[in-house]
Image (cartoon, rainbow, N blue to C red; front, side, top):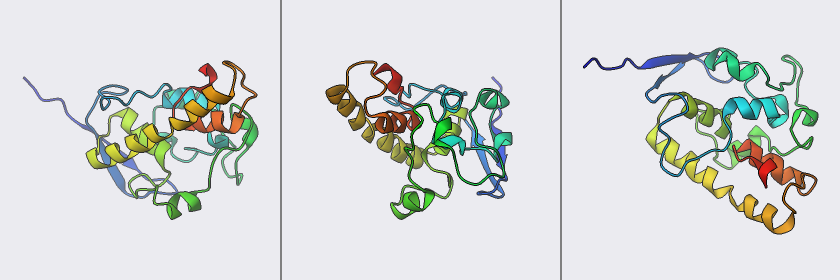
Length: 175
C-alpha cells in the first residue's frame, strides 16, 4: 500500500518567516482524545473573535473558505474593533501579556488560536499539542461560572466571559 504524502505548509507573514510545518492528520479529524472544540476556526472567524485582528496577514496559510464570512478588521489599519466580536465587547489580552505569562511558543507566535488553526489543519506537535489542550481544558471553569450566574440563553449575562469562551472554541451561545 502506498504511503500518503505529507503536505508541507510554508509560512511567511509579518510574525513568522521561513517556517514550515507538515500536515500529518486529516483536516478537522483525529484530534487528541478529550479535545472536542465546539467551533471550527472558520465558524469562529465568521462569528467574530479577537476584534477581527487575527490572521489578516496570513490568509495564504489557511483555506480560503475560512475567510469567506470572516469578520476582519481592515488590513493596514492598526488595532482591532470590539464591534466585530460576536458579543461586541473586548475580551482579549495583549500579545505582550501573553508573552510575559509564557503562553506563547515561538512555533505559534500568535498564540492559542494560531495553534488551533494549525492543529485543525492536521499539524501535530505532541508536546505543544498537550500544553495547548491543557490550557483549553482550563478555560472550562468559565462555563461553570456562566451556568451558575446566568439564565440559559441570556447573552447579556457576562458577555466578556462569553466572548472569551468563543476565543477558545467553546460555543457560549448555547449556555
